Length: 117
Length: 109
Image (tube, rainbow over all chains, first blue to last red; front, top):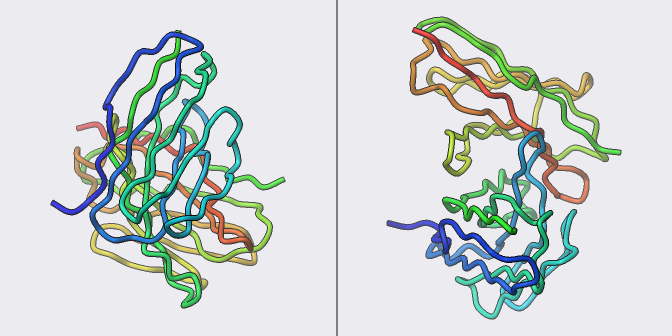
């Protein structure tokens, strides 16, 4: 089934530990995104990638890094986790057609629930 | 600053109609989106408006007024499965999505 796969589904992590959240899509979408979702707040963009080999910072990039070595994979790394990074993380992708003024609809993964103690 | 406002929670009765409002203040406008998110699941796309007016898609309709910075999502013939959060998002002049906090819709029998 075409879509986005995220791993792990859930993780409890000690503060100070390094953690990588994995994201893989099989739709050949060129754009990918990482969001965090916290109670009472809208989705906040952490990092994005418009195409393989390029990345950009979103609204809340501090403490996170990403890479985009190929079209399909977009891992998110927390170098040294802190309790404020406790959240649900969503990876998303889109077939970016900004130049055509299209909808550029996002397809989301199922999410990774991360708890930092 | 940029912000999207929507009610935190709404309650409606099965079979009825409910309207979820969204007002926005953003740097430019390049479209407004509605997504549905069931508890513990990923958001899924519902509708997209870029021009003023009403877009109808089955039981769901979405309205946009760019001059008023206002949209609503109208859900008709409510079903229990419509219990979910509804997220409003606006794409700004930089083609970045600004998200509202979502409206939790509770459907009662």
